[in-house]
Image 1 (cartoon, helix red, strand yellow):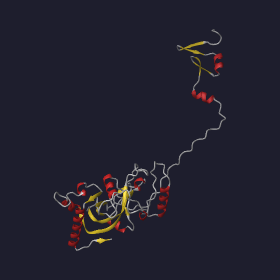
Image 2 (cartoon, rainbow, N blue to C red; image 1 turned 60 degrees about the vertical axis):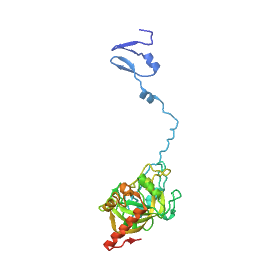
Image 3 (cartoon, helix red, strand yellow; image 1 turned 30 degrees about the horizontal axis):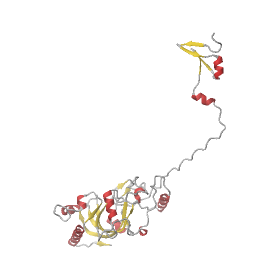
Image 4 (cartoon, rainbow, N blue to C red; image 1 turned 60 degrees about the horizontal axis):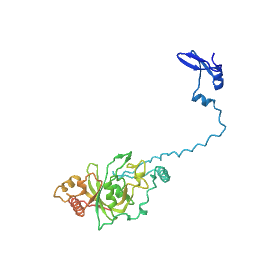
Length: 309
């Protein structure tokens, strides 16, 4: 017997300080094992022994609104790659989509408003550098079906001719091609080039009628060429609006262009020949005239006439 307060209990080489007095003082139950009593305790038990708080639970912060997907469009009008723009056939789907576009976005300024009516856009953009005279260009689109992100991006010169208002040439996601778009002045002319098809070549001409503005399809999820890095505050991509002018009676095919682009040929310095993957390229005045004369000669030899707007 020691001092009447504690008693050492020896078991397996350990000392357990356990006595009824000590247990009573600690207000915890004693648990007996084969080697002697010990006091059971722990964080989980301590929590259970705490009295329930009478204070009301603090108000929880409401969660943010959960984003919902917009209704899928019934059908998408085809557009040439890298040109692509969606158009609805189902009016209900179009109304739903337009309503969703007007909702504010929480994605860092990527919210997209509906594309403006081309008639509401000025022909000239004050940011565009003015150049003397008429400049010429070559712009590519795909006349045969190809799906990009589930959307058919087909767009041909016949599609352009069927348009009843200026057509936005969107979907350009190459910086050199985009810079060419931004350099265009209203009134410039461009060759329409059928690309990525069985018979690629120049098939007609069009005119730039609205200078560059933002390509909002880059900020619209679900479009073929959506770019999450393009925002409302810092848009990356641009488009111009064009109108149909002429469909050649006989196309100028790619093999002919390559022959004319050989060393010493009239197209030896043509940007399209030197940078064949560029979707929007510059055409010099001499190159434009040489190609138009070739188109006229081919039509005459075939006994056909061009189809003008």
